[in-house]
Length: 264
Image (cartoon, rainbow, N blue to C red):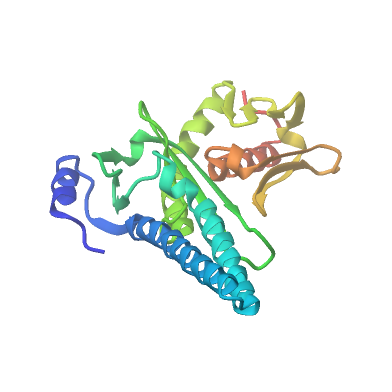
């Protein structure tokens, strides 16, 4: 997808650098409208055939048409529900344009230009309706002083988009979080709190010296002790900057392991 000249001009004014890739949801929006509409037309057509069949004394064709109408109706309802977020959520942008130093978001009303240092958090989660099914990604981008940008439903390659944005935000968040903890500050990331003494969640504390592993697995962010007694977990959808959280935990774990003492 080519970058519109208006996007390139405004991106140049904010010094976003070279364009990387565009993600456009507008095609998905059109499909989300067309599919239920076509199925609804099928309902009307088969219902008319069913009425005609029963009225003419031919019950079997009428019953077959009625069954087809029910199938079309179910398909229309399911399709509409599957795309309801894409059609109704105001936070879903029409297109996202990635640049070396930031991103541009077109919500259909205005074009927002954001440098990476203005993006304070990113939350990435994926849901599968069944084993082996396609993962439905949801990416929430938090920009300082503005509403959250919700990407996912219908965004092409939403998982790839989430990885790119997460990598950029993580590269900037990790030094900031490390500096805060080293200054003996406490920093909240969703349900987790990082502090000089360790990781806290719901009244439980896992000391840095006791931390064995932190990571993300199957949509769950976790930090566990070597003895297995303490394990703090939360859904990735509830943890902004989850990748940064894991990286900070691993760095502090390595530091305490090497130094044998807590950070002062």
